[in-house]
Structure formats: C-alpha cells, structure tokens
Amino acid sequence: MSTSNGAADNRLLAALPKSDRRRILAGCDTVQLGIAEVLYVPWQPLTSVYFPTSSFMSLIMPTPDSPAFEVGLIGNEGMLGITLVLDGDLSPERAVVLGAGSALRMDAAFLRREFGRSESLRRRLSRYIHVRISQLAQAAVCAHFHLLEARLARRLLMTQDRSRANSFNATQEILASKLGVRRVGVTKAASALQQRRLIHYSRGDITVLDRRGLMAAACGCYKSDRDSYNRLRSA
Image (tube, rainbow, N blue to C red):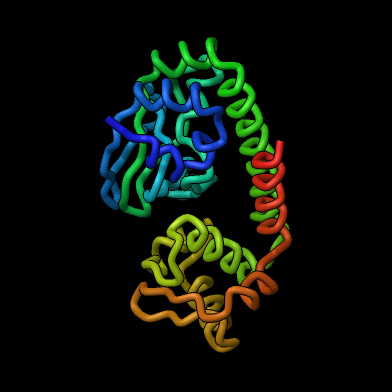
C-alpha cells in the first residue's frame, strides 16, 4: 500500500487536508509502470484511476488517419481517469505510459465513495476536470493555428516538466505521431531548435539546453497550460 510520501509526489493528493489524504491513501496501491504499458483501451470499462508520482502518461485519440494522435499528457500534476469522476466508465482515449515510474492506483468504486464523502476531494477533482477541459480546447487551437516549431517546443517543455529531467527520450516517429504531422516536419523543427542551441537531439535522446529560450520559442499555449494549473493549485 502507498504512504504519505506518495501523496506528496502527486500534487492533487498533496493538496488535500491531512485527514482526507491519509484515508484516501489507505485505498491506494503504489504500482510501478513501464514505458509503453497500456493502461486504458478505448471503449473498454475503466476499473481504476491513477495518480502519477514519478511516471507520466499520454492520452491518445485514435483516428482513421493516425493511430496515435495525442490529446494530453498527465504527470504528477493530475490524475488519469476523469471519466470515472464524471460517473462514466468508458472513454474513447487510449492511455499509454510514456515515462516509466510509480503511480498511486485507486479502485473505481473506492474513488466514487470518496468523491461522495470528501468535499475537499470533490472540489479538487472538479477543478482539475475544468482545467483538463480547458486544455483540450487549447490543444485544438494549437494544432490548428500554431507553427510546428512552436508546437514542438511546447511538447518538449511539457515532457520535461513531467519527467522532471533535462534529458529524456523521444524519437522523431513518436513526436510526429503525437503532433499529428509527418516525420520530415519534426526533423526540420527539431533541427531548427538545435541550431538555436535550445536543445541537443541525437537518435531520440533530447537534452534541453536552454529552457528559457525554449519557452520563448514555444507558442503561448504552454504558458496558458501552466497558468491553468497554477490557478488550480492556489484555489
């Protein structure tokens, strides 16, 4: 079973009052997740939610043209499984682990009991859902209007935030599929960022050399996402 240290690594749970946090942790298991592990399959019943601590996941919406178009990244700032909070048990999204590590797993029935019992959990998760909905809308705008180089910079910053490391692995094939573009486009955009000495890129290994510069190169959607989470944390 998990401990209070696990809750501290997930910012949603860490924000709960101590009494609620302790009781909720008693209903969680700490699990180790591996890269490429599939947690949710589209339109299959969801039985658990996950509160990432050191892992992070990609939410993928399958389409006829792309089997892996990404609609969200979830790390220790949030939770995987908001459909269950909304009293549903099916989701069209595929959830895949992108960053190996630990997470707190909670049974769906326990979550629903606690959601009805704990006002603090209900308030915190409801605000988180509002943030996620806002970010989905932001992502749609980003994909339609913003240049690929700026979108790639945003995606790399999002990965860095959730991996909590300056270096991580992301092949051109993976980035292209997540951004919904051809690989050649990612190659050009990554080369441009590397020429500006913002990143170092070699065989799928990416190192952020200049985070401030990369933030300047990213579209405004990255700042909007961070502002949304900051409002959630201060609420």
